[in-house]
Image 1 (spheres, rainbow, N blue to C red):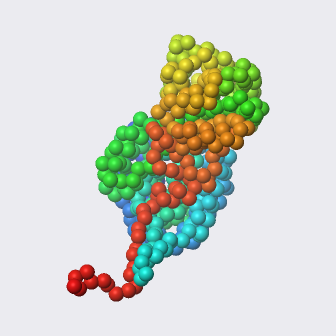
Image 2 (cartoon, rainbow, N blue to C red; image 1 turned 90 degrees about the vertical axis):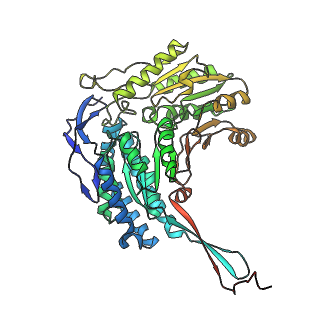
Image 3 (cartoon, rainbow, N blue to C red; image 1 turned 90 degrees about the horizontal axis):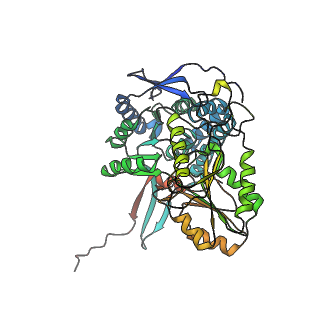
Length: 495
């Protein structure tokens, strides 16, 4: 592991109307998860909510934004995408300091995020209203219009990258946006808002309010807000969604996941082992679609497990800045304690640690960081907490099954339905199992293959609505039908 560099003690405050607000209240210390040491401070300010909504509302109504033709908005989106790509390293470093991912991974995420703006720019340039003839003399024009002020609440594991899934289509449709990143991960979102201003977006179109749960609730229930898009836990989504719905507002959420990754007896074992490794342990397991439940046909179980353990042993845990590091620490002391509690609970319930389960060997400078080894747990049953609840860390369970029906029952037997994957060479099974799995995304002979062109969202308790793809444009707009009749009015009372 590389020795960490000394970081400056930065201060982050909300960014509203193109201006950084003054610091108010007590600072929240931001802790570098690789060292356990404070590297910056952020300020939670509820008073920024009213300022942000007022600024966004004013900017949304201003002719400089409201009257922009789609091609002009597309040009701004492309410019912002270019600036994000140019600043990918700096943005990635801010993300790594917030969530512990390797800097190589976060910088790649930033470069990937830039493509979202180019995609939705192209969508704007090719999108047309729909014209439908409704009678011999009348036609209906079906058009999309912006909602107004949109609040985007983002998670610690990808405040900018997952925020992009919201911001890019929201801006494309002509909305004004208030980003609400976690209070302990605000840096990349603020830099993004500054880049939006540099790209030419009017002041107030992209704002950032740093906050906690109280700030999220105040934003969600503000009468000036038309929509809330949320990514986070299912428990929070339930509470926040109820408050948004009470105001008859649009609510889209991507919530928790407990994804099953199924290895059938006819799987390409070499590829399945690789995919199951990256699916469970990429980003230190801090992904909503982590394949944290690997289900293996009994005939392959021992062979697969041996190769899976060997594959996971190759993962290098190290400081995010090191080019040798595959994964870094988990994001916070809270996550560290929570994940270790799940491991201990699984062992107490009868599970067995086949790999990991502890803290990797680290240098003295990193001893206070939040390090957890890639961990594989076997001997589990589907009723255990570790097989039912989202862990959000580098921990995976491996279970065996005898039949296709059993595998599907295990996969579907949780409250979540965000993603699933399976491996088979049987085309009939590929079609059949894809249909039976209760998940918003199903990957066949691949895993974690997220693409900006493909809609993403959950079944059951994993969410409402969809992000990505052209479908996201519908979420961030409202449909209006304009019906015009070119003939004489019919008089029903003529006789």
